[in-house]
Image 1 (tube, rainbow, N blue to C red):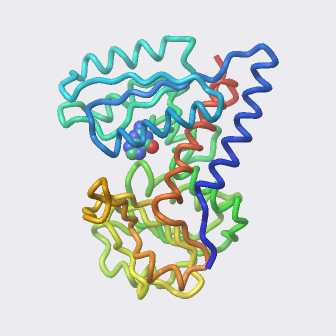
Image 2: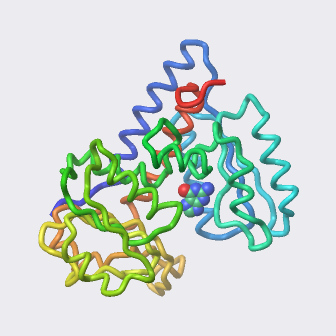
Image 3: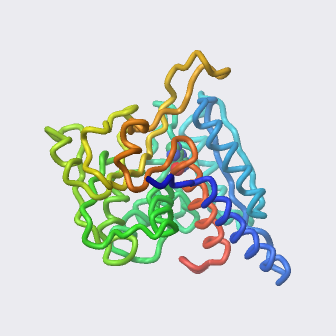
Length: 294
Ligand code: GUN
């Protein structure tokens, strides 16, 4: 079993990005600028956003955090999105999800100029990715593929079982894993909440990408020996032994799965840091105008 070290890979890539940014600055260009919008005080979202701001500094980017209270109106948020769309000093921006119930996430996502949608959530980017066109790739799926590539994990002709069909992870990662390039070229099966007997599918899998948000769902007796496991889950579960009172639990039962796996990441420290790296890569691409011009 080899542990997939997302922390190390993400640090390596951030260093690569930083070197490129410093060269850009030497060439007289301004630093890439990412703006994050955070609504409310959800613990998970606070942590994600703090890590994104920190990563911007590590990559040599400028970053701006805009905060709203939970009672911000949809109209106020949409007005800010329009303002950022029009601001030439902003290369890319993200609205941290989830949003409060009274705000339509889809409306907000669709209001973002797809040329600044560095999360890759806008239907234009989602659609372009699905048909293999240049775009801002959805951050977590792109991070997962980057991990597979950096560990030289063989994917061609393999059976990849994706657990979950969310727009943020399950659906887009399934699309990427079947694309005709590396990493990819897999036979892909997507299992979800209406799939009977999920174990019958995971038993056949060479690669399992678990993104259903159910703590420790995938058990050791549900996989074959040598499986590659990618755990996307990060659910906060109560843990009295921690100062915070909780720990992050992935979608897989690590202790029983690790001995049967060829590759597996820890949670935290696996996919999480890679999502942020993808966001940084997209922001750099946005600043360079490499995907969409003008
Ligand atoms: N909430 C959970 N993951 C993400 C992400 O990658 N981007 C945004 N904007 N919100 C999220």
